[in-house]
Length: 303
Image (cartoon, rainbow, N blue to C red; front, side, top):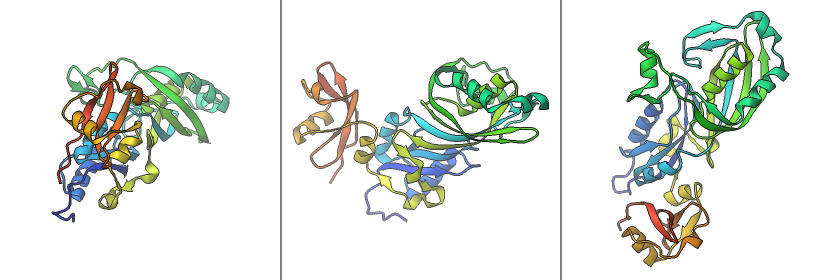
């Protein structure tokens, strides 16, 4: 139990989510373990999926805006030969491939059909997803038996590699690794690969191993959240963007909403984490013409 006199927790926590639990379940456990309600996440995982969740704790929840859109890496297993209504193993089976067609699929053909699913692609998300359609979640509409039409989204799949192939009489299982931009549905890649091969396909396993520079290797198990390392806001922000050290006077001005006049040459990118001489994160700076201004300020720490 946290000492009541100790400072309220503030930082970024990496958690390795178990399967068969929701991301909200993980947040709830973290709130109990760290004795604070102020916890958010930088993107959920499906209940079936395991792997990296990035949680913001206390004032550091303000950093989640800059983490949620980072590129991600997944390891997954795609089963060719069976389609489901959710494009993963949690859904109901909708079709099975003809055994002759499945038996004729070669490794070279699989590689050939994967190629158009890499690079910049227009991907239609799975209908059993959290995307809103006219104010309602797509999965709610689908489960209610209503027709769901989702528009394609431009995503980038930088890597889609097959690591291992296992064949049986009624399925081909592919262990794959995918590097992609935020918003990419790995389930949809499984669906589209199966469709291109004429076998159908769905996802049977999914694990997120990386979000930006944050790796699941450094994540705490759900059962050990209370003992997990809480990255302080400066360390966490420095993994997302360049660090810019400011003077005490500049830190005060930024906290008061003032600009750093003519300081754009110090930025070195689209944004930077401003750090004061005491090593505290002041906020996130962005370009305003020739000046720099806080796009996000952290609460001022009180002695």
